[in-house]
Image 1 (cartoon, rainbow, N blue to C red):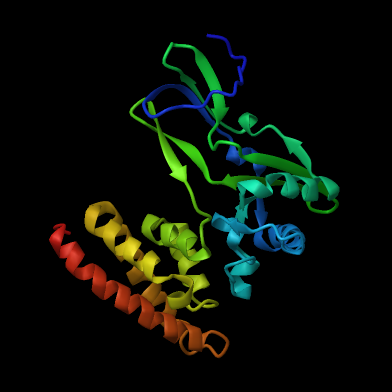
Image 2 (image 1 turned 60 degrees about the vertical axis):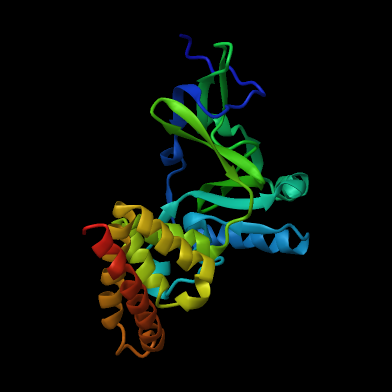
Length: 276
């Protein structure tokens, strides 16, 4: 098999046999939230001026659509790639805005790709997310920054048991939904993020009714999610108590302490049912 990437306009179907996959997110490096926001807020303002709707994903939402307290804003490291969803019809307009700002378009396949076999056994390579756009720009004193635009609706390619499964991405993700996935994942960094985000945001407003229903329904169907979500909830609830007597954070800590107590009460019967 050759190491040369053969890029085509053919995309995987459900069940396509995977040959290899590439995820080089680590090559973008790490930056801090304050530097990332200095870049992302500039683009966000330009998108708003030009009426380009967008939604920030993951850590890219911090300081942009999800507020952070000063103590976490200064300390939280994130990947040096800003990830934004936009509507597909705005793809050309968004690209023109970035080009005018000196952003250079690069091939996302170099960083995120899947190589697979089609029905006839021919090999193809496509981006992990269909029609994603990737840009880079060097900033004095900050270094090189990267930006990914995901055009909605689209599809992304998940690998399981040596095959590709096509997942649809039909709507732009709200900040609440971004954080819902973080709560259900429940890793150590998710615990810290949830605790500190709860010092600057009303969680009952950040997470909508559908987000809470997703947490409960997913936990009810998946024992691992139930356990991780419950553990995170308990951690955040007790962590917020530490801030209840702090003048700057006390009001929000007490407010969100009640939010997580209510969430914990909803998770308890689920944990009993899954035998935790």
